[in-house]
Image 1 (cartoon, helix red, strand yellow):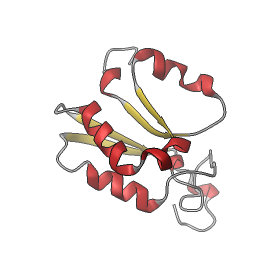
Image 2: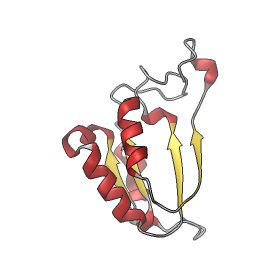
Image 3: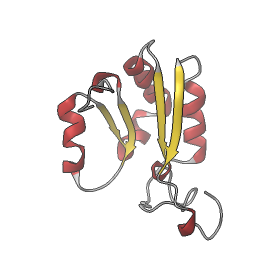
Image 4: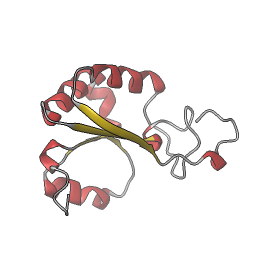
Length: 121
């Protein structure tokens, strides 16, 4: 965003968790859309899909999936596990709802296999 590579008005962060609200100040100030993890149940996945499609529009879209957005019951292999995350079912519903966007790339970040004794992640 600071280098002008990303348009913050076409950026949406979904499932953000954590008690330190100041971490998200830059996101708010730069014009990003932020949906906190604790708000997902009341908003609902279909409405979040609709909002995401509205935010990204018809332009090229890059999807970065932060594994710690999942509840550690589903993906314990992250350096920042925090209860109250998304379920695998919710993530699949969301990803399927993005069908048709101009997806040009993506990544999965924050994976730390050394913290996953179950190999679920």
